[in-house]
Image (cartoon, rainbow, N blue to C red):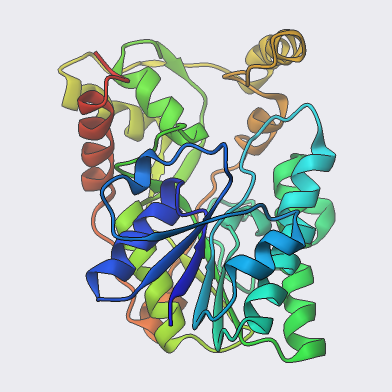
Length: 329
């Protein structure tokens, strides 16, 4: 019986697909008919055309499956139509989990995000039990992922759905084809187009370690529990310095106040509404950057056996992939 993976054409999802194939599992990937499938090129996987908002297509894709890894999500820090993101991330998650359980899945791993957690005000790492409310969510993406995880939890509590939740931090590494917002920062820095930065911090994890954590959650995770799959806490300045050194460039030394960049973010979003292209700087992104988004993976390490390599390795692999694929010259 195959394992169904949503988001298998994407960054984290394609890493999960590779991890499953490496241990000999048959994999079926849900993919939109018009989606970019480069991340699945050459892999021995079955493709099921479908969409998270189309229950009929999900029923067909989930028929006869043994397990579900629901990795797909609409991940953008700016979107002209938040309703579309809400439909994909919240109702779409319920749609595919129900379809998989009806199709025979005995267990589900749902990919949430540390975006649903509130970073600590003092900069210490937050964990799965850090108090968080929907009012703490900044922007459409974080709000939709918060409501999606709450809906999945209700599915577990009310219907006994066998779902384990994982919360990746900031995955970095190869096959970031879009790229993700963090990947865009690395591309710009590697290209010498980031002369300055804001004072913030991220938890950087290699995408392949995050994928391995998904499989550990399936094998060892407790139903209804959430597990942060993170790596190393780093300031943005240190991340950019690491990228610059890999490229033989001088690292940026100018730290800009958040308030100074905010007007430019408003202008960038106004331009984006006309062009339809995602702006590099967003108002919500700057609001989030006011805190250092540090997280602890201690629970996953203790309960799942999760391990993460140094963040520098993840950044080096990302830069190498971006260079090999022409995003950095």
